[in-house]
Image 1 (cartoon, one colour):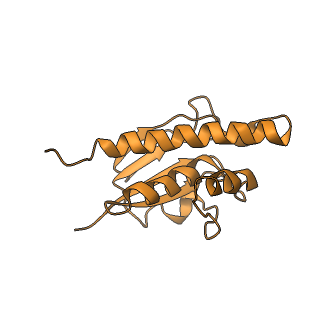
Image 2 (tube, one colour; image 1 turned 60 degrees about the horizontal axis):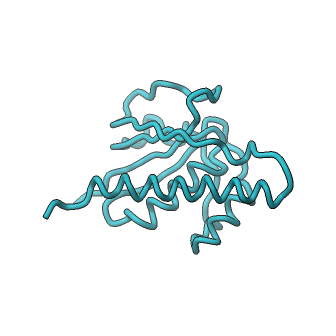
Length: 144
């Protein structure tokens, strides 16, 4: 049985989409192949790595990828846009993709303050993404 490919997109592929990809791999890997990309890829934020380690998820093998790495090369059953609705630079259409989902999450990398305050924002976003991935997967649970 082939797995459904899911692509998580955000601006830089530094936090939100990396978290979602990791959670889908952790919770749905038997049914889904998870990918992530950004419109303007940057280095993965160290706070992303730290908060995912707190959940026992190692991102050391991950890297930020651009959307062009996949467009026209890989078909995705689901494309999940992680950008906030008002975030500039996030395209609204994605030709050749399957079902599009919009999961709007604030970019924790935009948080200001002390390192502890920024870390807390990363944790809040991480926990919200984890819940959203788990809820989404519940919709695919076999019916009894």
